[in-house]
Length: 183
Image (cartoon, rainbow, N blue to C red; front, side):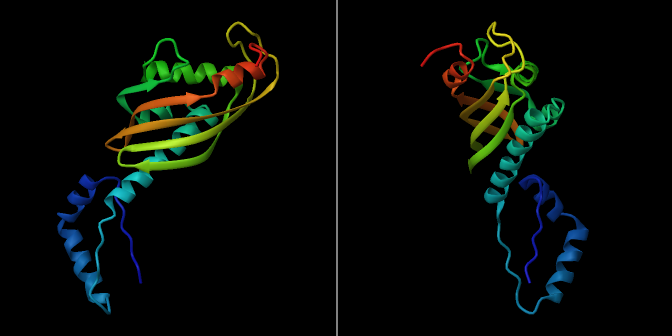
């Protein structure tokens, strides 16, 4: 039989291990075992998996569903976003949310995560975005054209929250699909 106890952070696990109730439950579980129990520290794997889930939640709830307030829950107050397509980068959290709102109104984007890799406090996500040009972009009014853009974003975490992001995406491809540049 395998049992897995998970905690949101190493600190939370340490605090839990100091509780008298934890010791009582531990002794009860050991008494139920046929063999000597083995304990394994999965901290790094667990933190990395939690971080990937936070990025997936950000892309799903903030961008795909347009619930901008979720960013306040998932990001540190001193969050910074880097995007070479932004003339004012790095953006703070409020400016990043304004930028997302602009893109939501311009393209109605849907993010699909193609791949995700996590190591330490970094998560790198390769994505595809599809949408419809439904609002003003660089002086071009809505064309109704479908768009498909690929890219990659790396997020850095502090204490389980998004602290910084670096976006790299095919801006030239988007502008070409909208007829703003010829390739």
